[in-house]
Image 1 (cartoon, rainbow, N blue to C red):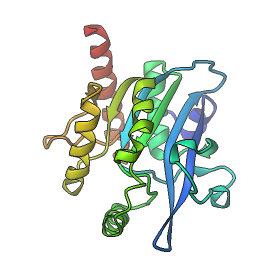
Image 2 (cartoon, helix red, strand yellow):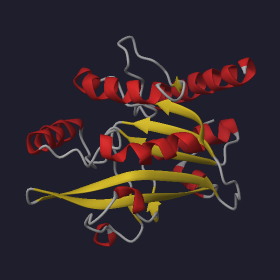
Image 3 (cartoon, rainbow, N blue to C red):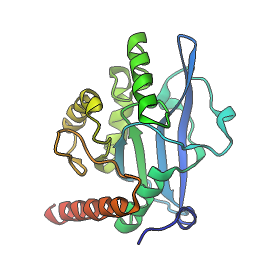
Image 4 (cartoon, rainbow, N blue to C red):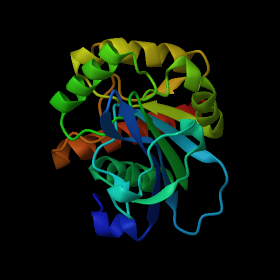
Amino acid sequence: MFQSARELENVFQTEGAFYKLDTDGRIQLCRSLAVIRRIDSKQEGIDALFVLLNPGKCLPLAGEESIPLLAGEVERLTLLPATPDNTLYQLMRLMERMSWNAVQVINLSDLRTGKFEEYKESQKFMKAQGDVRHSIFSVDRYGELLNCMEKANSVIAGWGTKSSIIPAAKDAHTILSERVNVAGLAYKVRPLYYHPFPWIQKKCIQWLDDMEEQLKETVEVV
């Protein structure tokens, strides 16, 4: 079964912590956290924490003008009602299969870009400026990352299989593995993991099938 966006929006609601980052006069849209909850669920805990590459098209319902310029700590941002994108809809489908009520999503980088080439360019720019505020895996944001990990029953990596992200993926995997067992559909090159939404519906369903099987096997073993 592959539920439509409309069907999923009747079951789940999405929120995000958004901010604008000023780096040497360049303003970039960012999202530090996305939260998907089953509508009317009162569950306090988080069933899973997904660690992906970077935010996609998800924006606040109130529009870009509602996003504040970062003036303090990222961790103190307010969650705003948001519009899901294809990746978040895919996570909702997994939530339905697993009977989950709440998941969180963080990324290797908070910088919101639509295409991978834009992602690479933005990362190159930030590195040249020495600005690591966009990464929850930076030293100054470790407490924020730890809080996310401690809330979740499972931590699932899905940052993709592009070879150029290997350095960032290795750093993230090392930090995560010190605290938790990292789940996810591993690619042949470690520590890369298949992204939840590979665009082609047949492959999307395959990811759901394989991820569901892995998660349920883990539960049975425990």
